[in-house]
Length: 526
Image (cartoon, rainbow, N blue to C red; front, side, top):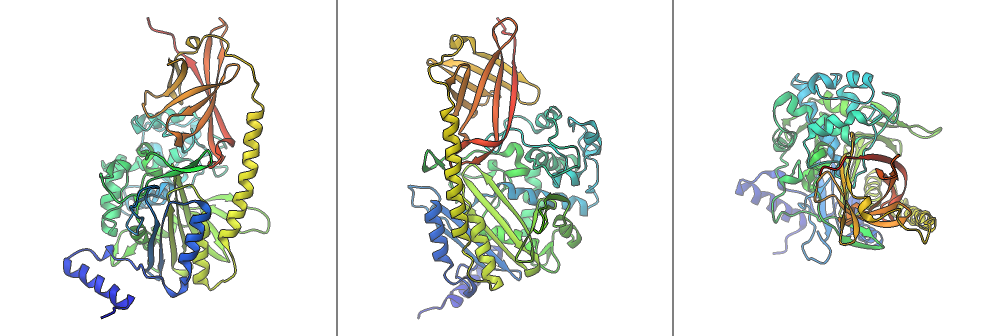
């Protein structure tokens, strides 16, 4: 007997019930009529953007209407991506962090407007007013004014205790005056996550899995890289490096886990979307996890991101970006770590949500989400993929030209100002901790924080400037240079962090958002 798709789905659900397995593992993989032809659109986008693997899920009216995987987990290997494949959702973790704190707010253990220093006495910022007045809400709304430290590609001393990272924040000047504007900060989301152990005694990772994921039925979702098990169904990251998409090593970002370390699948991220949608958000399948008013507070505008004349307001809630799509309010958040791009895109007024994740840096996630949303809104004719890919192609050419101009400005025929051994030594900075420069096999090597995973070979560029090429090629490159002190010896090491590359597919530079760190040479110990 030939079984139709609905019959097969009912049979699959019955099998789960008979096996005593949670119904949460079930997802609709048959394509709904609203999305007729979507597979061809996905395959076209993956081909153009050179995406090895992608996963997607759609929630409508409190039901998972579609969840599927495409492509492979790793180039050159046959294991396919499916709806259960785990992807590092990166900064989508921020909304999950805010929800975890919302549980504490519901329980009266925390208030959105509590000063952070009341719960974390070691919290210090460069601005003493911000130190004493910065609240939980300020951290989650990105309105403290503290910017990035070293960019997403570097694990900001993740091998060190978070308490040390928090202590060092006092040496980073604010980019904008306190509460005067929106400045995105991964580090302050790490601080926000540390409110969990400060108020409960539980580590953030354990709290999220036990108090949020478990009651949601997200049994395979992880709150930290360290929770990954060998042989897990997980997507491997890829990057375009020197014009070729290649598999790269997984890195753990657990040092700032609450900002970027959650791993989830299309099936289970659908349950996360359901928690944030519906007439009574905060409840899924009769299990209440958050009060409805708490969920609504997460999605309420708290900080102005940008506002241009005759355009809709762009704002940030608590872990959510707020915008408009065709006159509808959107709550969304993207995420990007080494070789993974993710997006959650919600239209609460339509009770509609889309999750997309790809295992390479790409703009296709947003294009696909908007294509799916338009299909459910009954809008036809907008080719989001074509528009975004054309814009990307144009931008890529411009950024390559800017990179070529940087290379053309290199001064040929110069030599370092002394033997390589004169550059070697230990250097320190109160914010960026410690660095070591040494000579290995006739070339300079830079190592940060005594971490074997933070090592770069220094290629001579010109004069006393070098290009640091990280041995983990996912981290790409930085420019470093040395300056002399009064006695004529090299006393300062300068590292120019590319905090946000203009286009990572081209390289870490050019970058319009940079910061120079100056490390002072420490006296040698005989």
